[in-house]
Image (cartoon, rainbow, N blue to C red; front, side, top):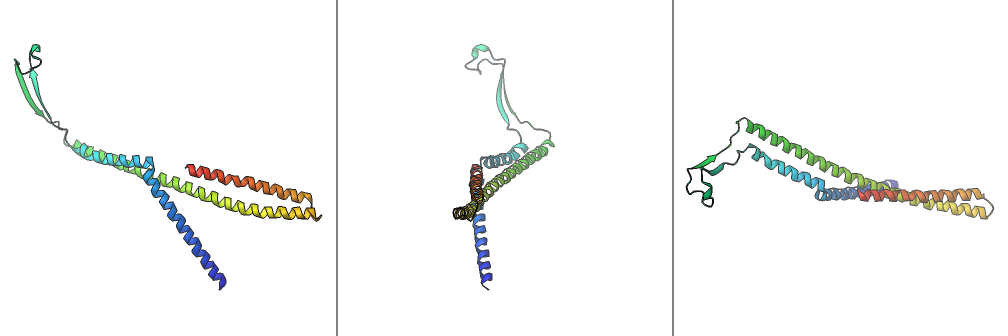
Length: 201
């Protein structure tokens, strides 16, 4: 009965710590979506491409103007004086009617392509955050394991030293234990390098 209670409490503790880790990861991901420059640039690109749809299917702006013909060069400040002909015009450029739906389709496809690039940038940012988060998690877990192993091997070193001092052990056992302790201390530095790499991501 007691083992079941302990197992149940351990399960609850692990579930709560996993949910806190997932919540922390979700906060980091939402922060990356807000502050990542590639994601923000892709989002603005989508907005720009969507606004070009109506521009693509619209007519060109009309042109209004006045044209003077055969005006003497000496009447420059007042072009209306002594001119032979003055023409007023209003013109509208109209393309072949079948081109407008095609241009709208091209604009829509361009907008869809920009949307896919935006989604790709979001997925890449999420992947990078998750990779850095789990790299940091693994580095911290390795550090914890190395600390426990160093503590255990340090105990073995003390035992080997006492046995050697009392004449019950060999010097080789003591030196081997010291070598193993030094190796573990050097290996413990590797997770620190991984932690720095994770923070840089």
